[in-house]
Image (tube, rainbow over all chains, first blue to last red; front, side, top):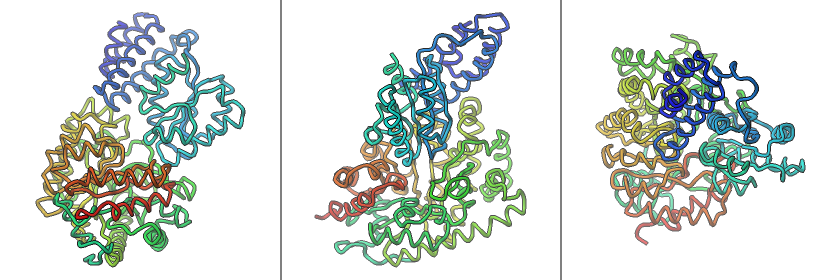
Amino acid sequence: MSDSIAGFISDVDEDGALAEVRKALDAGADPLGLVEALRAGMSTVGNRFEAREYFLPDLILSAEIFNQSVALIEPHLKGTGGPSKGSVVIGTVQGDVHDIGKNIVATMLRCAGYEVRDLGIDVAPGSFVDTAKETGASLVALSGLLTVAFDSMKDTVAAFVEAGTRDSVKIIIGGGPVNETVLEYCGADAYGKDPSEAVALAERFLA
Amino acid sequence: MKATKLIHEKDTMTSEQRLQAVINLQVPDRVPVSHRIYYFAAKYAGVDNADLYDAATWNSAIDKCFRDLGPWDLYAPWNFYHVEVLSLIFPMKVLEPGIGLPRDAIHQYLEEEIMPFEDYQWIMKMAKQIPDLSFLRLVMRWLPKIWGHVQPGIRGYAYMMPRLLDHLITWRRDFMRWSKEGVIPLAGAGVEAAFDSFSMARGLVNFSRDLKKHPDLIAGAADAMTAGNLYLITSAARILGVKRAAIALHRSSNDFISPDTFRKLSLPSLKDLVERLKAQGRPSVLHCDGNWDLNFEALRELPAGCAVVELDGTSDIFKAKEIIGDRMCIAGDVPADLLALGSTTEVDEYCHRLIEEVGKGGGFILSSGCEVAPNAKPENVKTMMESVVKYGYYNR
């Protein structure tokens, strides 16, 4: 059953995946096992995206399937959804309200086993700093689609420096116009050009 | 309106002749230079972005850019005199400077559903009944969902039509003003391609689901919109006095969809529109945001010598030259981040490379990759404009 759930997700079959999750829950399947199956399916989706077999709509829809499935499974989970591989704070930087890319990255990170605190959109530099401190997160992911977001990313990195916590976090950036030049400008640690790269960066920095 | 003034001393062609030559894939006297400046002008002139809806403020700001940083041959008109007119082209909820955002912010779109799923069927039925008016009927159905003050039905039309007309007439005045400087618009009337329009109006999550489960409905509704898009373009073009039509493709790049999806669902209605425009002697300017590398091959299906492909710095423009350079004019692609963060030397080097490689044999317009970022360095914009004089003449 777990295999078929992973299969439905990796084929981005929304109806099939949700029906299979419901069936498994009705049959008393181990909820943690189901979450693992969802993660395995999402991992395949990520691999296919990297190989350019899949494109953005496949990522968006599979993230939707994952979130809907987790919502079905959650009431059956006792405690957490499994051991966390680390904490990540994510948000769209100040002055920018775009969140599609950020939401996909947040879901992909959750799928990969990270505990994600999503601060939403238009997030002030200080909120990133405070939340990283509060959660003990050692990875902060900044998203932005606009070129004016470059300055907000730079300000956010500077806020960590000012708070004296820059050395305790790795800061990664992503979003449409982000590249090596922007990375250098903001003083972050790395950038990812798509959600798969964001997960790879988390694996690298939180290993 | 004729722009007869030559832009630079060594020029032997007017901007109109130069643009015609590159669209026809011929070699002009020099590489033409264009741009898409909007918010940058406000910052440069020291006014709020919210004030750019005022024609006098906009013209004063862009004139300052022209005097200090120009001249340029062409420009992609991107200023709107009524906020709702922008929503006729981009059917998405939007936060505007001064309306939901600070007066100096730039507008931002919200991914919310404007088009319910049932509209695919509705569009196909409606467009059969009133093909020419289908664009107007559709956007006026959506507009009240974007702007609460626009009422549904006849009151909505009564509110919008004078504003649309005023916008077009003011653009025409702008075009005439620029023609005295020898400058012409790259395109006049424009639409968002039908496929892309649905992607925006449905919202990305809904549209992703539609692509998976209902591709036939998307294709059918997109095909049905061609007559309405054509009618809007030709009607507006009569007022504007510009034959070249802009077709925006914000959601057809490979950042959004696969090349297979592009070929099956987006290209057919695009091709139909471009061919029908060509039959009327109207070149198309395809605004191709995002990465189009895997779509270039499919673009070869469009008729040769009647389209400009505008790239934004995300696609590989050098690859574009190899694959479609013999079929269509390429415009681009000095990237936003280079203009904002690069040095003048870096901008100069990149423009030089574009002129030498993409400009080889003609069929090229040097331009900013999409919009010049508001935080672009003015000296970088000037360097871009000057590079066509430095490197762009074909008979050096």
